[in-house]
Image (tube, rainbow, N blue to C red; front, side):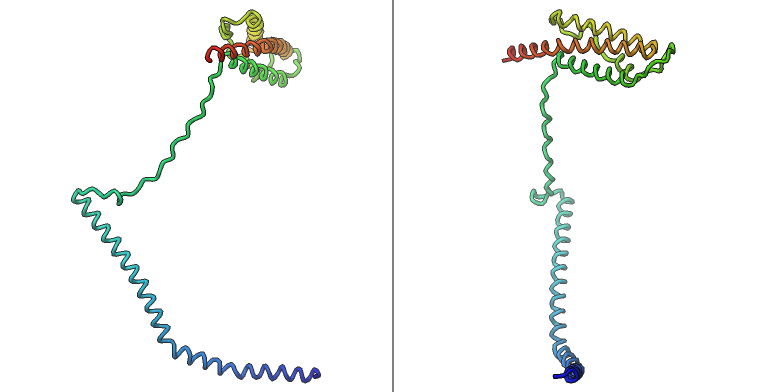
Amino acid sequence: MNFAQVLESIGNAIRLFIETIPDAFWLTYYWVKDWQSLVGALILVLAARIFSQGALRAARIRATGMIRAAQITAGVPIPQEARPVPAAVPAPKPEPVRPPVSAETDLIQRVEQLRSLIRSAMSTLTADTGQSEASPNYFCGRIAQLNFEANTVPPDAPPLVREPYEKLLAQLAVVRDATERKAPHAEMSQALVQLNARAREFAAVLAPFASQVSVRTRVAGA
């Protein structure tokens, strides 16, 4: 079969397809015409069923509302099953119980805070240029406001603990005085270096003392 015969066969197939289109159209038309009454009846039945279900549900809702309204008017209590059930409120979670902080532990934390402020203050101070006054330093002001009193250390503390604490208080008073006078940076830096040394010495003896007090407390409570 050559190329001309192939083209002729394709042309014949296209012509036959085009000739069958009108017949298929009329066949579809007659089929719809014969069955349109049945299809319409089915659609009508389905619509009537949906409408009846909706009307029945609306009638039930209206009847229930009228009955409840009449009960409320007559003072009849609403049955338990008809009352809305409130949503369950979750019980609040109990807060975790935190062990009380002992006086020694609190003092250790305050000493660490003091040393942290000293490091911050020394890092912000610059070399003095010989002026009689210097601008106030924020961290020095915070150090001066820290609460370290003479009775902070327990009365039963040994002299090994009380003496370094007294030295710490004395040097803290020097820093407070320098802060109030707006001392030059060189003087303030020297006072902070001495205060940091006193704080380090006191922390070194306070930690073992706090451990001993904690052990004695646990033994006494057992």
